[in-house]
Length: 178
Image (tube, rainbow, N blue to C red; front, side, top):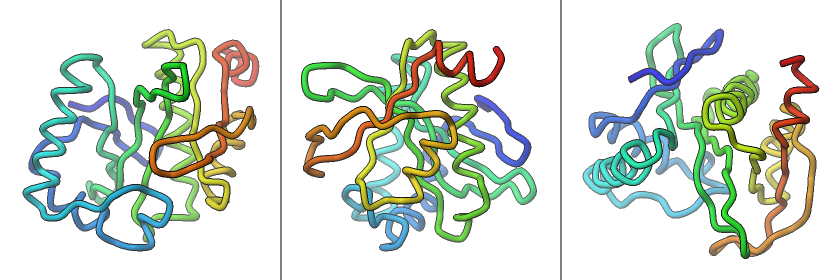
């Protein structure tokens, strides 16, 4: 099911059939430089997709979505919204990962902008965060381009201290004339 479209992208729900493409993307060391654990196998990734469908789409109606290049119908990554426990608060995070062959084209910014719009308009979130390893300069630029502001460093899972960028619904509305 398609969730949203941008000028160049389709964001849709993942299906177990996406496991091989995800495995290819998730096992590239450059793609995963600032991300977590890589999958052990295509079957492991298929199982992770099934869990994500049950834990996010079925429960909340959102999650990470397959990011597909319209021009070729190729799955090039994933972008979406996640619940994250950050210190003592439950936050909504915009998260993305694109295959390195599609970096530097503005696709992550294009997707992230529409994802936060969806978060504010459809899901009525009051704020959305991005958790970024400070050395990940490209992700910092994406966050800033969509209007996010650095709030503070936070401890996050096995990543240690990460920068938390925040965008509030009222600020998004002002910036985008909504």
